[in-house]
Length: 376
Ligand code: FAD
Ligand code: UDP
Image (cartoon, rainbow, N blue to C red; front, side, top):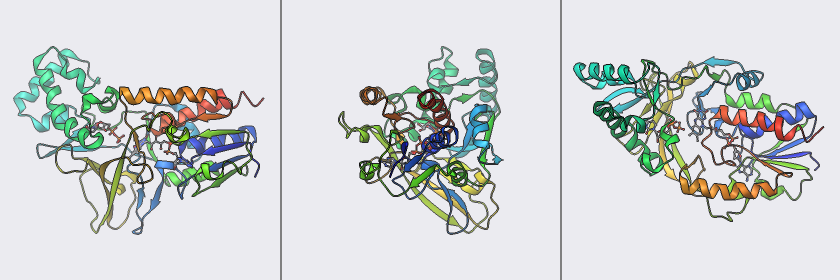
């Protein structure tokens, strides 16, 4: 078989790069995917009860990038959706990211007024304040608020999710969910927030619908790469595996999803409820509340964090901390020697905690800067 490009992985990164190469350069692409479906971790499907669920946990699309939004909008219509998350704190379900409404729900009115006053004195309305920054604040009461949020929202959840305390991870991890000095309960504040109207998988099918793109499922690229004639490769799998773990395995966290169907129309108060402190799981997602689907009954998934074991479960999350980032740098240096043959891109190949819009932006950028210029 003869192709211009071999792309490993049919997730966001692989699909977008394939589409660009086929439609803009007119070159032939083979995508090899080890799973039995396209879409990577954003894959969704209708379960046996007819409810659209996300196989690898809740995927909410949000971006500030007009470019990414307009690109994806060529392949899907959207259902506007603003994600709202509640976390169980001291027996009450309160909005997360923690905000003025969460304070009001948890503290006596005199204390919540006092904290609000202090926030106005020290910050600007609308500010997003990472929990560690608040803990460090010179004002004792604000530092108390930071510590309260740390203990009740972050500590238990993070130990379950990562088997590490928040301070043992890169600050950017908990920084994803900063205190929001507002009454805005939305989980994300981005300009564009929506879910593909007919699902992610449907959107990927349309991205890949091109005569110059072929997809081979259920195939690890290592099984077939010697039999395929190609000029260049885009690799979106785990970078340590590509180099046969020569600098040691990069650690990842995995998850186990317990999907349950309930014969009632409404399971919980919001699309996602987090359990920072109680139980062994971190969060419960109710899919109908995300997609807006009308259906009888409802399907939820309960997420149990797990250690990652190659060949046993999936490498969902790179574990961002100093020693792992340093190990990744060793692998990244190896990639420089292959620069003209292989492009490493995506969450696993770059060992970055990327959201979907970030990998989409990266894929479009790589096409413009590294793929298109080398094909005059
Ligand atoms: P992937 O989607 O991981 O695709 C890589 C593909 O390569 C996979 O399909 C894999 O099977 C394949 N592959 C790997 N090795 C090989 C091999 N050797 N041979 C053949 N194929 C191979 N982002 C958001 O923006 N919003 C969210 O709400 C959100 N929620 C998330 C929830 C969870 C639980 C997880 C894990 C991630 C979430 N993300 C979310 C992140 C999102 O999933 C990623 O940003 C995105 O899917 C990354 O796309 P990718 O193409 O880089 O990688
Ligand atoms: N986090 C937390 N409690 C929460 C929500 C998030 O401790 O209620 C921390 C936790 O460490 C988590 C990280 O913030 O892994 C990032 O949260 P996010 O919701 O972005 O995680 P993802 O959706 O990527 O799993």
